[in-house]
Image (cartoon, rainbow, N blue to C red):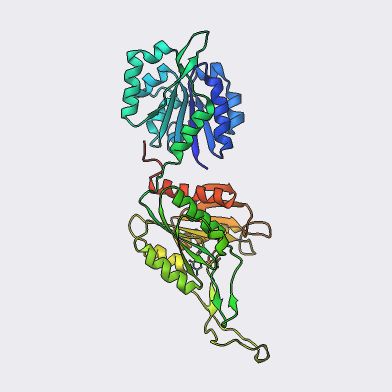
Length: 402
Ligand code: CTP
């Protein structure tokens, strides 16, 4: 889920921005609307707020508690201005920041998509042509208006493209391969610690979340290796990444440490056994001899990877928690985030219906101080995209392409 700021300026086509807002939200994105004062003469605040689920402020003086004039611009992964009037193009080209949309435009370092709509004469006027040229030279994406019926009976170039077309252009900007050239290593699955040649200590992790993380990173152009611990090969079919199979915590640790030496992003999504038999029997233990296991602790792979983190490397861990007498799941996760020191710890609560297997997931992402930086919910693929997106944001690449 990406964060989209939708600026709406005072053109008659503002009503089409309502549909655009719907399309972007239905595509799973969090959209905040910034109407200009004139846009509110076309479509009222109640519509924007009800459909976006956020306040829709116009002026920087409506909410002065949280520096909203800076906050929305830094929050957004994409700024779309549709419709953009001739006046907006002029103000943006000149850097005039006399309302919330103006300040947001200047603050945003994310990609910006501007969708002009105006009468043909205004679109073709040298002043507008020059402004569009300035904006494009600055890296702002300015869509060509459609040709067709305008506000009255007249027609020509200047019509707002239809909302699905604008949504497609917006989503294409969000899908830019921002991780191209980035090396990613992801662990997935659950380790198995042998007791004897036929028995092991294992866990219930299917590997689905890690697989989806690997897929999401590959979809953004990264070179990905998946270190798969006992993952059903049917789940790996068609996955566009290199897969290395491992079985035990020791094998997983060895492969992760090797790959992390030159990786930019390291994700520990595997469920690693915390204890293993101190000595595995080399023959099958017969039941009439009885079985007493002495367990020893496995090394904490994630903590080791954090300790060896290269400059510029981003390390991500996962924490599936249940509550107990010592604290809530959230409290355990916050303590774990601080203890492990990963750049991002993706926490989810585990119960009979949450967390394992082919079920939806609900996660909170914490930084190394245990503070919440993002949330995501939905399928494991949705959560994976949100996690990778957050990693890209942490690395500064989600907002570099303007
Ligand atoms: N992890 C690891 N090595 C281990 C155990 C866990 O790298 N030996 C990683 C997991 O891949 C995950 C994170 O650490 O990214 C948290 O795993 P979890 O099992 O929740 O943490 P533990 O350190 O085992 O904490 P506890 O048993 O106290 O809950």
